[in-house]
Length: 66
Image (cartoon, rainbow, N blue to C red):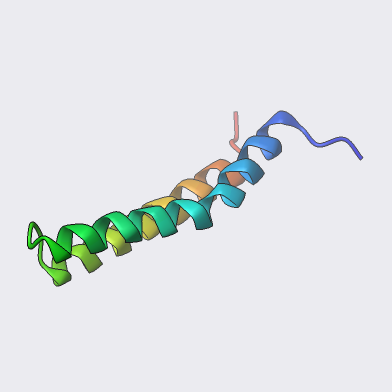
């Protein structure tokens, strides 16, 4: 079964997502520990990242009409 280039890129993006979330969470946790940002702003940043990532996946997955 041959997979098109578009779907390969989409799958690579989706498979890299868990490690990206883990890394962002670690960075945000360090920023909260050092009192650079608050816990609420850290949660907001993480939620914003998740929503924008899901939105990006949906945009790439839907076919475009010419």
